[in-house]
Length: 365
Image 1 (cartoon, rainbow, N blue to C red):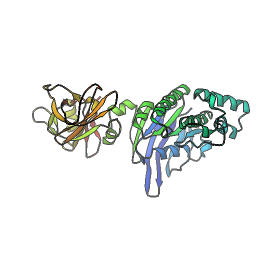
Image 2: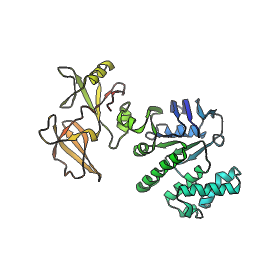
Image 3: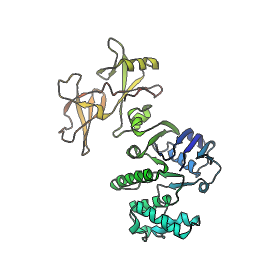
Image 4: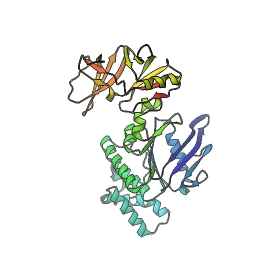
């Protein structure tokens, strides 16, 4: 396996800049996830690493080799596409064996590798079936097996689970992660699904409008979003963002709608040092908004706008004046639309952003 290094990569389609001077490094044996909305440049970056697209400038290294001028077949990579690109007239065995036969691998080695991949993917009973006889999940496993037998330096995967139903997607996600760790395969995985990114990635690269917004371990990116885009994109439900005003009259505080929330000296210093004390926004996650009994110190009465029953928890959407935000409760809570609840905002878990730049002023742990 090998690390992948991208340095100041630029890719244009006419006047559209799809990838805007991206630099990153994927470590040897790492599972890196490119995460972002449609059109953010994640698939274009992946395809350029693979050699399926040509960049206008920048360098790509796989291991120590600069691969800009190498054809895809010379880069020692395996690509798993969103649409499986299988041969329907061939058996599962022949589909998995295809790249090995193209390389004129000895027959005994082809048989050994195909059976090894099929065993890992629990597909040995299906090796003699035709592709058209398989379910979508089984076809996806064939595509993964075809990539695995290559034993490349790097695996590149472009939203390979998109076409699976929810249950099969969750099962295959776990299998993919297990296989990647078992084999120590350097992997770059593209998705727009944040749950998939959080569950699978050793690190996440969040992209938007052709640029990297933030990169880091999943929980670090989740707990310390670098800017408003990352804060609003990552999380299910997403972080609620609301305008806020800073004041130092007496105790330093942030005013969010009708609520005045005292803040720490550290946050006060960070806001003042930032230089923008008026154009602020506050973000908070639903799990940090506490539903509390009436009369609790600092509690605010709110009206229930809607309730989402998710089985293991409820997401309660509430209104307070012109504000609307979310809180979470246990599944046993009996809450209905129109009810009055009391909530306490998380003064120690507020995320504060400069709305002029979009950057985080401080993201609490």
